[in-house]
Length: 309
Image (tube, rainbow, N blue to C red; front, side):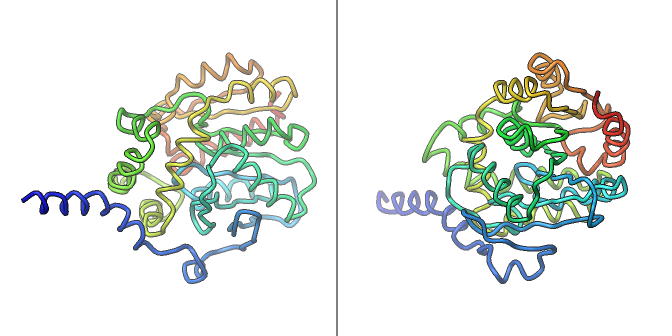
């Protein structure tokens, strides 16, 4: 009986990691259907796409924690219509990019963006648009390179407040046991969360299926956990203060119904940066980048035309 219980315990403990090991690698076979281009950077392959006119002001879009660059499909249409040449790319650990095991800190993601821009010979200043965790990455990049950013646009940005339940907090703070819990329970929670949005309007066709497909590939869950434990475990008070002192124009757009980045983050950002222009979409939740693309484009058309003054 004791031996049986020991074997059962070993199976229980090893099962989530065995499932992860059986997931498909992100490699040449998986990338056959990837749109756009691939480039080898210092930490691995990065998938990226250029959209819109060959010439024009450049907008670089940085996606969030679990939803790769396909999240920008609706907004790209509006941005290119505004005359922007738009660069989208997959962060490491997501989409068609590689899954390095480095801690996913702010510097980790800044380096990826720096290398991608250098490889694409982008030397002019850019409009940097970050969604959710991508807002935190964009904020970190701008604080380091304020002279490179013409406008910083934040959509439901992380870096101020992040609403998480008790289990998520435990997972983030607890090595080993937290890793097991993440591998065991996050895939189901991710599928369920995406499925709950199936009835919502979306500017990205098949957004729910695309989100759930991320779980087919090895390294995605580990990457999400690494971001939660590193980049997303810190607030960005000092970064926003640096951006404020540098005079970089900032526009922040929030969803009133957002349960991931609560609307109280808006007040926190006001305290950190008095010159930031802020807008609220009343009926939007955290998925505003694809559920409320038209409203976001309308705000951008007005505010960017005004220079965010």
